[in-house]
Length: 264
Ligand code: NDP
Image 1 (tube, protein in one colour):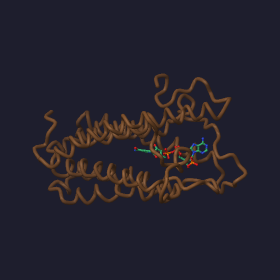
Image 2 (cartoon, rainbow, N blue to C red):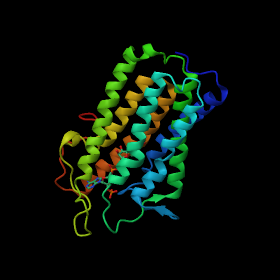
Image 3 (cartoon, rainbow, N blue to C red):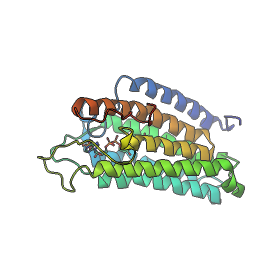
């Protein structure tokens, strides 16, 4: 498969995107991105709370993909439409459902710094542009027979497993807090159940798996870029979280790995 599409703008952005992903990976060895609960709250300047921070940061995922997608000549074809649906479901969960269901401990510091939100916009806009432009315009493999291609079928199964694991694990974490958390209850507890039996961050493992599945089922380098960015972000974040659990809970289960069962 040739890697370039022949569209100079797209191919140039893609190269820049992969260099950016490599830089994110290198920088993540020096500290995880400062958003969300236990890793947020540091740094100066304007900050948003967890719920609003997630919605504002992830919202381009719901805008850029459909806007670019609509301009493509294959926008009304069944296979691209199927990928549009998957994308919108995924980002509706990430940008709206998960943040709105989140249970925030009262008195928690605002944790999304503006520079983190802006970096998030840049990354998520690139995700949307690369995938929408390829799926609805530049890719020529998405005829109706793609639905019976082994790459589509295997990728869809991996996607479904990953997405389900992510949602299930997020639900376990959410239920560690009461519906209306009070300042007196402990903010963090040890999660049990599901893949928490073997790893500290199955929610991140599920997220990465879902993008492995998306890359396989769409068979495009834009999706590999999303996967690279997600893995560069979440694998180090899982390792920081794993160490954080060991530091904060003496009775933390010793057999758990950080993110990939029995391996990492
Ligand atoms: P966490 O999974 O660390 O936290 C999610 C929620 O659960 C927060 O409300 C958090 O509270 C709470 N929580 C976490 N651990 C505990 C615990 N031990 N006890 C009680 N409550 C707990 O979240 P992230 O913010 O890193 O990720 C949220 C989702 O977004 C995940 O599904 C992740 O996969 C996805 N994500 C995707 C990325 C990508 O690149 N595609 C990047 C980052 C995240 P509090 O806020 O107080 O810590």
